[in-house]
Image (cartoon, rainbow, N blue to C red):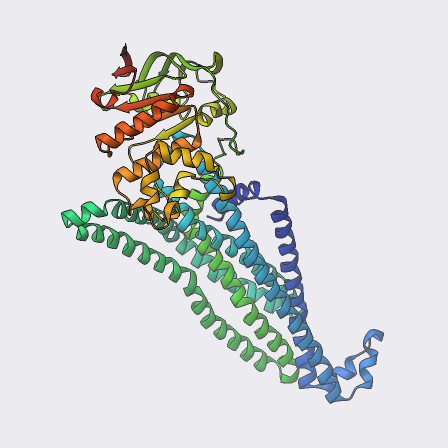
Length: 584
């Protein structure tokens, strides 16, 4: 399972900025420093216990010229001197470890931030085909629930490295003090944790898969409940959705509890056996050695080493268990990180369509289907045209509009803008397809409103300093919002609520039309955009659009021809084929 994490780590590494990589090397240096200091502090235990148990013997054993100055101290002074060195080394070790812990937590948070933004970037800048086929609950659960698990995995990985270095250096101290005790310690910990890891591996992997799926299902049932709340209240189906949520949430919490237990229980198991091991070794030394004063420093060093190693080894195991438990979640994040940005990340820069847009022999089929939705479409639209598109549900109206807006790339055929080829047999460049999007404003039947003011919803995505007051005034007038806004207490700064719950359907559609007019695009697509308006308001908006249509192409989509009475041309689509083009 760590192999899977290393695979994910390589993807993470490729997505990191240079300064973040430098931070990781700094953190590694801190971890090594902390481990070396841990070695020094434990190394001071043996001389400290020796001085405490028999200071005279220590003074007699000093022969090196480097330590000859210690002979000038009395026994008590020697004890104070060695104890002071031990305390200083312990304090320095503690300070460095605390700083390393803070640094690792901060770096993990920064990594999580960068990766979260990268996942969102790769998602939002992907193609329309991707978004049509993608399940929104997957990206929501990835960003809100699975990304924190990746950050926890990164923190655990840092802990594994730090704890491994500490264990390694402690073993070096034990080997120098007593190789036999070192060998017993290595064998003891390795056998117990290896057996536990092998016994837990399959269970953790199975739980990981189930947790990742239950996370996605929880987000999905929450989305469905929020989206269908009106029908839930009307149908009285609250209990059904509550049961769906309760079942999935209970399953997830039990699985998480199981993984938490698996990651924590070895500590208590090993602590018990470690105490027994220490007692047995102490008894053995006491029986074999009559001089306990010479045994106490070795036993003291061994006990302290065990006390230091036990939590470090437990952190290694817990980190492995946590990373393994989050393996499936981390794979989801890795998949998004591996999905490169498709659209160009650049400021919006309109390219004016001056004459016409023309489709020549265009055909399109969705990736999941071999049957074409549109076949051999030939169509020319000129500035000043008001085109009506009519057809039954599933006839290909939406696909034609999406092709026209540059959201879909045709499989065959050519598209010309102002007699300039921008797409030929699907070999469309990203830069050229931007010409479509920059020239299109789209008003769907269901207008999406953000939890902001009317101004914020009309100028969606624009900073206040960039708002053009003349275009704003024009958009309010054309959409017949000017009088409605003027009557509001806070005028255009009135908040609309989440998804515009404080507005009627007709008011939402007029905000959508105002948003499209404010964009000032050459191609204006009204996809059942006036269905919630009364006939008088609809006619007034169409009259307003008539006054600005000379430099635009207006395309209206409807199921019924009666709704397109303001259009001067009608296009009828049936079974993916444009069968009729009429002039009124």
